[in-house]
Image 1: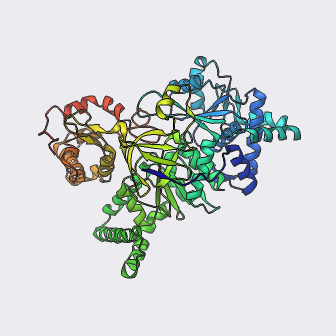
Image 2: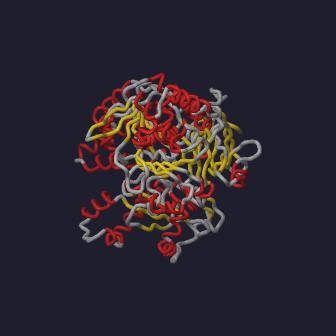
Image 3: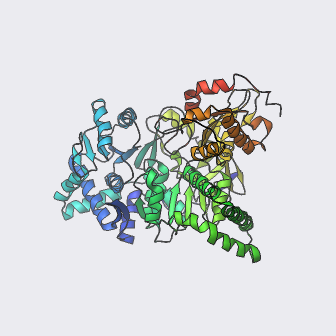
Length: 613
């Protein structure tokens, strides 16, 4: 069975045409917004375009040529956008590097792609390049985003722009425009190195049309008002934010406001008051946990009101999702529930949010339904770096919780005999940089790309089961998809993070990082005494409590799917330790190795065999 989003609704195009057209069409005072001295300041389309033009000409003055590669090592900020569009307009392929990457990882990317220049945001990022510059013979220029020249940098972005402005003439401006608009749709726009949950990073080659087609297809199914504001905080180094939070927002005239950091997102939401927010499930999990925590921390009356409101909202959601309009007493009760309870949740998002978009990893259906019932719609989608990225997305007109929606226009999806999801269309990458054999393994002669994910198609909606490589096959031959089980466990208020282990073992187990705020509150209530968290985790009563919470979430599963033991970990899994990808997906094999001693201990005294049912 093949699901399709219908025919492609655009001719092949380029990101340069998209940018030039958006600047001409919108001419807004707030194309971008950035916080300066405690308040958000706007940057107009006119100013953005002028800076891009000057930076592009400045690159040419440095000798950076059409077809060269340039890396961008930076957090989200206006200069990231300026550097990106300047590269694209010059016919240069830019290569983003995550700002939390190590110097060694940065050196690998620079050497692998042969970058001739690097944009860096801060002294910390400049120091990474300076540390490995001697290993990177292709690297000729380092350009810092700070106003003053950074240690180890050769230029500032302002100096680069000044260099371009100094030689700007009408003829040079016309040449800039002609060069930008002469770039072909099949020209390489970017190489994005996959962090990957396994193996060495691979450079994904995405053309202008790969990304352009995905922008146009996404715009066709997700409504934009023309006056939207988006808060940008997912890393622009990742293709999800790059396409959806950067190019798509530019093409729809949406003002892009940059969060100061991931830690300031709650504050920035109330300052920017966005109408659109793109995020990975971790944000929604944390918001959900906070709402439950606040409800349970109140008095008896507050608790009763919250859980009454939740029951009402749940009934309202069931009716609405079934295509019926809630009426009568239910409609009245829902209005009261909104006023008493859910309006406070909406206020924390700034009060004018039209919808969230979720991608990067599966979102627990229970959490999605809770937000929907509260009046905050999360449009869950699906894609990969290799697919530019969007393959499918739920839309306001085609919305089904538990799925990742239907394919966007121009995209085809089918399920292989072994359950793997395949996709074909203009969104599929050109290939892996310098690794033609890996490209041939991933894309068959008919153009079908093998995603590595497993799923099913239901009425045209795609449901993801798990990563093909993450499927646990127990020693008894039982197949377990861990992600849905982990998502279920994470909805428990005592759980912060969870990873299931069990491949080639007799039964599955889980590693759990507790929600420390909730667990410590419970421990105080039980009059437990401890000096540090590590000590608390050794207490039999605490372990029994956490087992009860985990097993309570998995009791409905088939016996062979139920985790038989729980190990409690003191610290969250992190990107910095290599346990999570930059979009917070678990690197299961890394965790399996890192916690081998803990895991082996769980299997030392085995419970009764689990694979009988």
